[in-house]
Length: 271
Image (cartoon, helix red, strand yellow):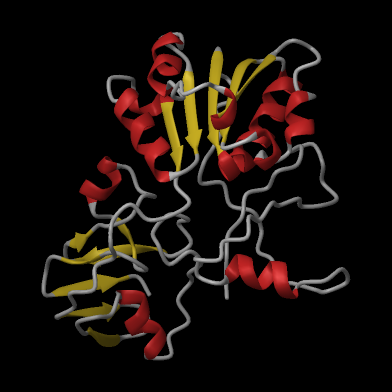
């Protein structure tokens, strides 16, 4: 069982990793296992950190928008911007104050005045909706905007920022936006190992590789973390991920084998 989590602590810390895991009873089992089984003193294996949701430290102004547990990657960003003396606004929305993660630490941000914190709780706004569009509209033209949270928030954010430069808009998904490609009916040729694997209906490429005993890198299995990104040598992928940009998908140079399929009869992968 492999899972990816955001590092929450101050990037200046080099002696520990701090993560936050919300227990999801309807999830794939990772959070339940960690909550129910992991104990102080247990040893787990971790990889080196990967940054798929990078902060532009040179931006004149940054707007960070978080919903629920989506605060996890943005909290460390806010700390970093504060340390750099960069102008930043952090908007944090949650169902209720008691359900908000790291609230004490968030309210303690910005003693130097660089980070302005705005808190928004469903049960405290008297029927008013969280106005994400207004936040985006008020942001300076050259601002970099970041969002992490539940699916409806991310979709609203992408709609609100569609007229902004693509390089100034940053989103991190925790779950897939569309179903994986499991239609099958094509072959995957592995260039380095000189093997051909048939991908049958009901299976993803990753499923077929693992069934064949091939140790392919993977983590989320939903196309959001980037762990399984694989170079495409020939063929046309059917992209289903939320990791690659539209331009990167159009180039067909790489694909996420955990969720994407094929539009051609054969894919040649750098595996």
